[in-house]
Length: 393
Image 1: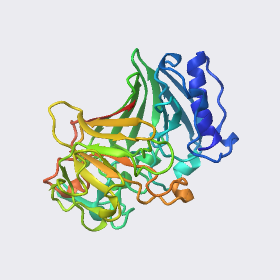
Image 2: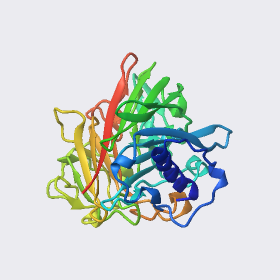
Image 3: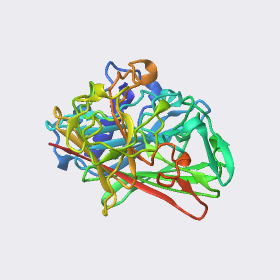
Image 4: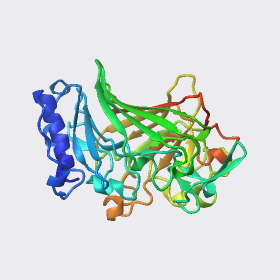
């Protein structure tokens, strides 16, 4: 993490404790430090009543084509804070105290806006118009075949060469009695990345005093179009090292086996007596060697009358941090950072340095009519909600 990200964590906490806004420094005025996971020291050993629910904004940098980007700092009275920029609607950091009160960033990310602009692992971003893969980048809709970019050869991945993760979003913060947040809007024109229809999308991040980070999505389109939007945060609840000792539960009795190029076969297979069974807690690294390439599959969330439905629970035994996820989506892509390699393009993070739980529809659904529908038609509204609830044991 560079001085700028560390400064963001420190400033957001100081603002909360003093009630006074401070003038921020541009990221271009800082230089990287030795560790991406440096602690926000002022957060250590503080009790909840020394913080308050608040939202601030500050300049984050300027894109290569001259557009100003802002960062929004959401904080609550438990000492949790979330940083979001309006480039890619990216979550750049989530600070959370451990059982000793020591606060660390538990997400993976880059040091600068310039790095987010380059091709990368989608750290913290909103992915779309269609997250995950579409086989051969093709689908047919209303008798017409559409060809999309094959940016993950031979497949289309996460919206193409310039998906929603590479767009500048309109953004505004809000503060209400029991929550703070930021609303982000993007209008995807007809034909962008090969998709039909003008799509209007809103994503709302909300933080409350229960340590819940909620993401609401709504969209409309003037033509029928596939849509499958997700957040692509990489989590490391320890704040450093790998995630192989994290313990995970998935509320999923079935998963989607894949064939070549990680495309689902169409089968919804039982997880029982396989390395894909996380219906009870297992360490991520316990059986990962039995899965070729590591975990990068979509699990089927067990149906429930109450929505959002419980989806996953992850615990880091070392820090005591816990994350629970509930979602209205039918699937969750569990990915274990298999392609992180420690290089600059990976933000310096090594293999298995983070895990993703991307709540979404199933991969390649536009070519699988037996899968839950992903076609948004004019006059209809696409809606989904995912909640990340954090606690400490």
